[in-house]
Length: 346
Image 1 (cartoon, rainbow, N blue to C red):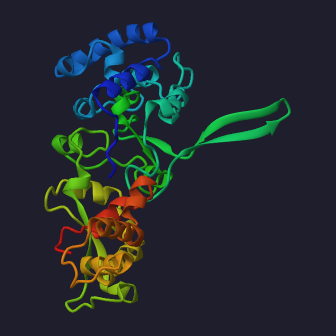
Image 2 (cartoon, rainbow, N blue to C red):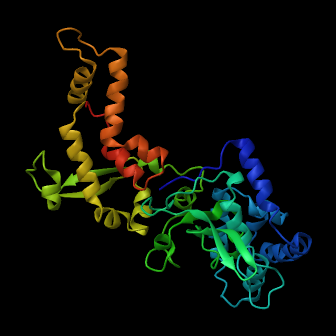
Image 3 (cartoon, rainbow, N blue to C red):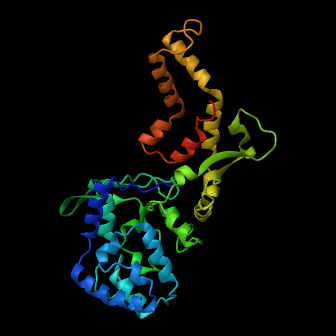
């Protein structure tokens, strides 16, 4: 739902340089990669075009390329205990493989996302925008003295399952900060989205093709023919939250996969509250409130004075709070933005 922000081209380049520098035993891993890559070539000719010769290059491939690699690897149908599959899991060891030669990189990668210098804007889950995720500094007293550190309150999910395709386990653009609910066994877990390659390349917050914010709109759908235009909260059962995907139906796959419609409807009272505010405080009423504050009447001036325009915007901000939601990274920001869409003649 929330597209990952890697900054401009210059910042992205620095990010990639910092990320690949996390690779320990780089020379030894590269030697192993050369041998395993040739074995993959023999199994599937397409790998010659997809797999870079340098392991570090694979770590920073665009997500669209990773999706191709993932789908191609999946067609091999290697068993979990296949020696090539196990060798690749050892090489791309995100977590420590039992008896493996290479160290796990999970801790250093998580630290990479926590490092403020890298500029990641981590506040709410990138899959659902419902749950706050963050990292915080702590201080505790131990026998040896005070200890300071940073603790993580988010999961780092592999969009493309690393268990099914170890090749993508250490790739920057396959990693998304998420909440434990979305990444847990009851939502994503080991499930795989049932999509074709074109859809897979698009449906990830790390993809340059991802455009959930513009292609999907959250709206209140009446469940009955005759509805009231006031006291929305008193008629909650007459409405449900829905996701309009008419602009691009592929996003239905993501919405269904993460049960977004069902989970959002649990919080539909927030949307109904905002809808009620829109009815109570129309643009004309807000303008009238600004005129009263500025002590100007309709007869004196047809259009609000410049100062009144500032008051109008301030009143709107105070009543609806969308700017506050954006600036202070509140959850359900897209829900608020879509419900408070003022491009409707209001």
